[in-house]
Amino acid sequence: MKLVLIITLMAFFSLQAKERPNIVMIFLDDAAYSDFRPFGNPPYATPNVERLAAEGVRYTRFHVPQAVCSASRAALLTGRYPHRNRVVNAIAPGMRGLSPEHPIMAETFHKQGYATAHFGKWHLGDVADTRPMARGFDQHAGLLVSNDMWRHNLVWKKDHGDLPLPYWENGAIKIADISPDDQKHLTSWATESATRFIRSQAGKQPFFLYVAHSMPHVPLYCRDEFKGKSGAGLYGDVITEIDWSVGEIMTALRETGIEKDTIVLLTSDNGPWDEFGNHAGKTPFREHKGTSFEGGVRSALTVRFPRELKPGTVNDRAFGSIDLYPTLASLAGIPLQEKDTDGRNVWPLMRGDEEAKNPHPHYFISTGWDLEAVMTADGKWKLHLPHGYRDVIRPGSDAERGETKTSMIEESLFNLIDDPLEERNLITKHPKIAKDLREAGAAYLKRFRSGK
Image 1 (cartoon, rainbow, N blue to C red):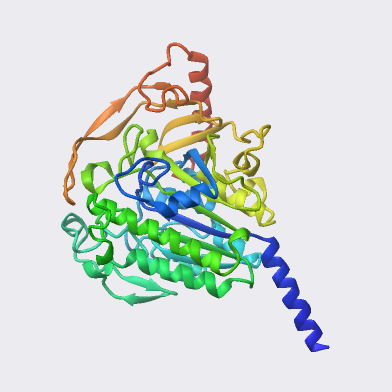
Image 2: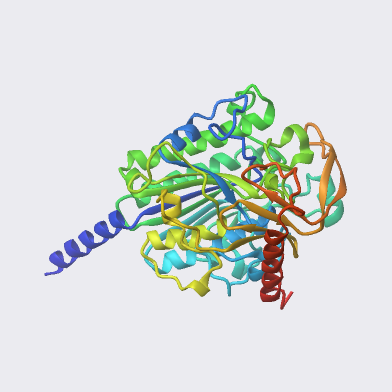
């Protein structure tokens, strides 16, 4: 009788693992829209990302709600706008960060029978109840903050003191203070942990794997075997190693026989940190990280899911990172209430259904606590409210930070279909559209501003 029960349970979990997709989310730090082929044409090869795109779908109009490390990550994992989850800007060491009152993907998926793991950069809190192992992850290894928040960064050290930058593993500090040589291994350590997790879970329960690389955020590091490999400087070498990482993860999925049952997503938290010059990527759009222009908030997204997505296609339908949580939950058969997230299930749109419409009326884009832009859900119209932004006037070189100034933009309306570079202000030609977006922004602020 006991043997029959065991066999029945094994069959049940095997069926569950096959029917409920595994999810691998690869999230880069400060990667530019054009860093990888086929989104751009960089002077180095990225064959593994190209293959991922050839076997999946390339999304060209994917937006984050705030172009800053912690805010973008909190929005991704909660499906909630920064004004709602209260995470804006970047969280410093020792800060609490994202409150546990805002559930994240890992917690929800874990409660529904998924194995969960996070490897790489966290940046959502650095006290006990906000670290990864307290937020639904079975396994974790990596940094709790950005890789520049360490004593070897003289600017950081001047403002914050001689603080160590520890490397954590499963709730304990593994390396008390990482060295420059340790930084060289951050990409490979996250990759090796990810592939081990995949191989250990294959054929068992479904899993949610969040691989959040610390690179290509400055300071740039890669292993010695990638140094000089790209022929395009250190930044190209770092991207080449990230491409290798994508290949290793795809190989693990293929060799364990779960490739067809796994959703793989690759994107970035925001655009490049432009003021670092040749240590930053290049975007075809206006401005960069830390701004509400397309160069800051539009990220390249590639998704592979053989069971439902047509390979080798390009999807130019607009949607946001806040939509990934409810969308993936729906694919996993996990019920969410509309009140649980600000995002919505956009899978019909992502799948390319001709009649699919974005369920949102608008998307909202902020910097810090300031609402700076409102975009129609179809991604056509974008209204910039008057605001200042960091404008690079002299890019740096070889890890030197360049010179910036604060520029101002008046209330401006752009047609992103005809003018993705946000150069032609059409506010006088389309006052009704501007009025509608302005009023939507006011309603958003009225809803979320309390408790600031």
